[in-house]
Structures are given as structure tokens and as C-alpha cells.
Image (cartoon, rainbow, N blue to C red; front, side, top):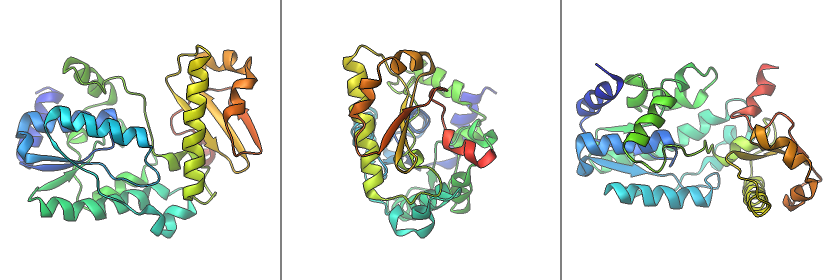
Length: 269
């Protein structure tokens, strides 16, 4: 049995699901697969709204759910109320995911949905340090993509085959992932990063750079900019473009380019 057949069988076994829908490629594919297998009436998408979610992500998530005919909920989460989240230690994602599931589990029960499902895939389980996965598991969340053995590459390939707009969507981790561990997460810092990334993406686009992956990392007083590796030298030759990053004492360009989860490098150094 192939991975897609295993996914269909797993979803059929679950019967009904509330999908924790971030809008990214994995949860979008899971949502589409669930709607196909179970019917839109047995599936609800829930996108948590908080200061850590970029506004553009919410708009895109809403449009995607509508394209599937799936009901889309936007519950508020309050990660800031959790000391462990604000402290921004290495286990920050545990507190974020705990807050998410503590909000979604009662909503699933309210809508008579059997399970809350996350978009965790087979690669995520091998990625090492993932405290968020542990928090979700402790609260009974199911992981159909992981259960079926679907990798990120397989999710993107199947999404493309199905004509899903998210098939090649760049990774879009929450805004708190931009803040260096040990620096307190605050609405001010999250907003500063979001504004900086939006302004820089616009400036780079206006200058003719086709940027796929972009991050502005908050190192305290310093902003570290990561762009696609193949663009690093070109952007380095245009330091004027970095001037749109506001609110930091200094702005530097990372010569290594974009790396998903680069903040974790300090944990293993």
C-alpha cells in the first residue's frame, strides 16, 4: 500500500477531524486529503489567531479552506499568558503547541469531531528537537501524515498533482521563531519582525530580486537577515536595501543564507 492509500485509510479510521490549519503546505494537504476522504461535512479547519501569526497567513488560510468548501474557524490563542512561551527558552514550542491544543480540543468536542489532527509529517519526526510535537501528542492530537509515512517531498508532490496552490509554498514558521532563544517574546518584538520582513520583501521585489525565503532574525539590538543562498552576494552588493529594516540598532546580512530553524544552531553549538 502506498503512502497516499495509507493516509486515506488512516483518515477513514479517524472518521472526523478538526485540522490544526496553519496555512502551510503540510496542514493544507492534510485538510484537502481529509475533505476528500471524509467529506467536507466531517472536517473543520481551525487557524489559531495570535500575535505570532502574520496577517498574510490568515488571509491565505481563509481562502484555501473556502476553496475546499470546509468550514474555517479562527479561534484566539494566548501564548503570551504562558510564562514558558514568553521566556523563549529552547522549549518555547512546547508551550505554544500546548496552548493551541488546549484551545482546539474543546472546539473539536463542541463540533462533535472525533480528533484534532496536526500536519506533522514523517520528516518532522526525524528532525530531532521538536518539543511542540511532544506537547501535541500529550494532548491526544493525531498525526495522519506521519502515520502514513508521508515525507515533505511527498506532500509537495501530491499537492501539485491535486492542483493545490500550496504545493510549493515556502516554509512559514511562526513569528516567534525569529526571536533568538533567551530573549523574551513580546507583541512589540513580534510586530517589529513582521513589519521588517514585509518592508524588506517589498524593497527586494522592487529592486528586481525574486525572493522565495526571507527571515529577519531578532538577536536583540541586531537584526540578522537571511535570504535565499543564491541571492546573498547580490543583496550584499546592495546594502541600501537593508535600510528598510527599522527598529534595530544594526542590521546584518547572514552570509550563509536562509536556513529553516537556524535559531536551533545555537542549541547544538
